[in-house]
Length: 545
Ligand SMILES: Cc1ncc(COP(=O)(O)O)c(C=O)c1O
Image (cartoon, rainbow, N blue to C red; front, side, top):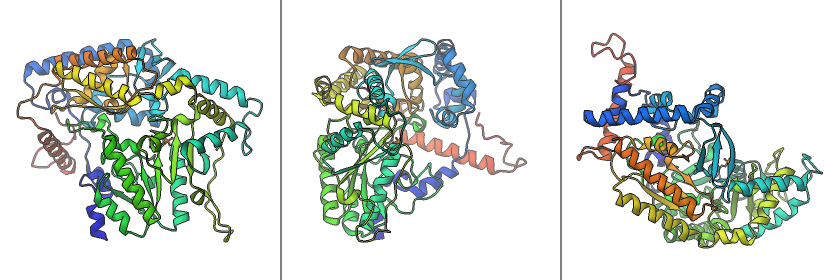
């Protein structure tokens, strides 16, 4: 059984949670000084000079264009833990300090409209953040949901515990959409997932949850067993996605309560959500094969049914984005439980769990003291229910139905045409997509791909803190809006190329880059461990010049 489990682990560190946490704890801090920052790939002098000039120009542009936005961010940033974290992890840590000192894009926004957001300096930027995936239909849609929803529940106000009548409609619609029997409301996607797993354990009497390598299910410890969680998750198996070895484990083990699936992984099975902070080379790839993933889900469905394992689709991200009936409809496979979140409360915070009756019950008729507890002060808050009511009503309108029509062919053809244009222009940038969820990857080896996020920002495109790892389009992007974004991606890439960042030795490979970075880490670790008087040298600072 142990051997079978080992075979079902992905060979990467992501597939080995304990080892990944151990490795992460050993990675030493070091950073590049001024000169190495521009030439860590051994670029010749003229290329280094072009990079320096490009960097200075961009830094100057940021300082002027984002002055007030950056000013307020600097003022408050030191006191906001979230901001400190995200600003530090926008680019690989070796480059991060220097970048932070020179680029201060700022975090504040004043308004949104159509497909743009406007910062405190009055810059309108095309929004590619999608507000973490919440924004499926455009910000104006959500403003209306919140406003009208608020009007609907105003008389009751913030009364908790009892339900506003709009909740009855929400329950009925959610059950229709999910095809399941019962629903529970929570305050975040993370909580909905926690509840799904807790119930699965309660009803099966088994301990373990299975998640697939790289999949994000929120920040609860049991679903985040690797880096980021100070404790090892003992009752979690992280298995290879889309692999027979994992099916064999599901078929044979008796301790598995549930299988959690985040269908977003179809875009990059076995890989964590891509962010530019890990972009030390050009190894990032993505590709979506709908039929192959649907076949995989069907195999999971079969084995879960045969073994009494609860199959949970975590649709917090993709629900309502791929199809009106979510991933279940899109891939044609039914789950025992489904979580929704993000968009479903019309722009207000929420988590929803829908499930089959036998799994949702929190008590046992025959053993009244044996309960499965779950509460939450703000669950089913009237304002959240009001905005959700508006959301669920509106997705049935012709205008929204129209947005869903030909959804994949629209976004696939936009991605294809953009890739063709990038290829014709000989720019080392490509996109891959799962419908309106995109990621950028880089076909040629380079140490500087993470710089692209700053060129895109200068071109008026707003990305989230994971940079080019994830672009999320709202479905109200018209052909004209998209054409403008595509032009800007091309011009940003052309500017980055002419500034020399993508220069590369003919012999450079991603493997060589990774080897070099690994060597740097060993040197830095050795330097920090060596006594100051070491006869081997006087490296007392981990900074590598
Ligand atoms: C698939 C999935 N599950 C769960 C979550 C957690 O949701 P929340 O951030 O609302 O806690 C997320 C958030 O990104 C998600 O993408």
